[in-house]
Structures are given as structure tokens and as C-alpha cells.
Image (spheres, one colour):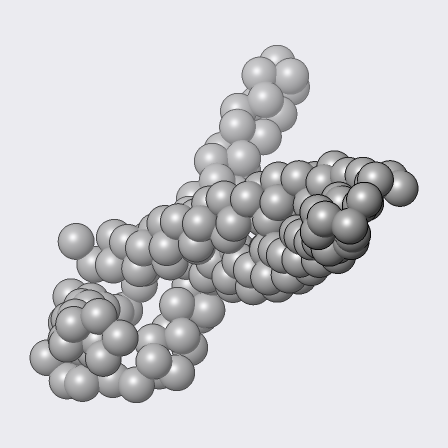
Amino acid sequence: MKKPIIITILLLLSSFLIKAQAPIKSTAQPDSIIKVIPYGEGRYGGYLYTIGGKLQTPEDVKIRLLAYAPSAGEYQKAKSEITWTYISMGGAAISSGISIAEYVHHARENYNNSIPTVTYVNGYPSSITPAQPHSSSLTGAYIFTGVATAFLFSTFFHMVRASRHADKALHLYNQRFE
């Protein structure tokens, strides 16, 4: 007889615990939705942010996104992807600079070794091309060109992912008001 009563009491208490852990309804109003308005074109373009019809600064939007946990995670991912975009861009610039230097070095070396000289053979002028002591290899230039290309693709890849995470952060923030 005691066992069914104890089991019933435990089940009732567990239902109260589950009810206590229910998410608290937000007091935010639907006019808290962040709207993004693009302006301008190309280099002179940008975005304006409105909340409840009032213009907001990007810092205000950042504070609101970071205050809501799901959108804060996506915002942090977007920042991380932007960091990797800059790192990839720097890697592409450095490796393409090195590959250009390798190509220039190869061209100079071959130009200096292939200039024909004018001499007289049996009283007649003729040109003699000196023998190449060694032919320089373009392997380093090819490798650094490939590395620069990989970094360039990585830059675009991270830019696209950063954009997607930023859009998702705004969507997650606005989703709770819909």
C-alpha cells in the first residue's frame, strides 16, 4: 500500500519540477524585430538597422544579438569566420608575392644567360650564345601559385560562411517575435 502512494507522490513532484523548468515567456514585443535596410551601391554601400521603426547603430544591434543565447552563438561563429577570412587573405597575398618573386628571378636568370655576344670568327662577325650553366626550375613558383590559389578560395569560402552565420544570427533573434 505504501509503494503506490510513494510512486504517486514522486510522479507528482517530478511533474512540478518539469513545470518549474519550462522556459520563461519573453516580455519582448514584436516591435523588437531587427530589420536590415541596404543602402548605396558597391564600395559606397552599407546597411542600416531598425528596431521598432527606429534607426539603430550597429553596436546596439550587436548588444541585442549577444543578449540572446542562440543568436550570440551564431554571431560568434560569424566573427570567427571573418577572422579566418583575413588570415586567408594575408596568406594569399604573401604566397602570391613569393611566387611573383620566383617568376621574376627565373626570368632574369634566363635573360642574363641567354644574351648572345658578337665576336669575330675568321674575320667575319658572328654571334655566339653562351651555354646555359644550369637551368633554373620554376617548381617553387608553381607551388606558391597553387598555395596562393588555395588561400584565395579559402578567403571566399570563409566570407560566404561568415555571411550565412550573420544572417542566421539575425533570423534566430527575430524568430522569437514571429
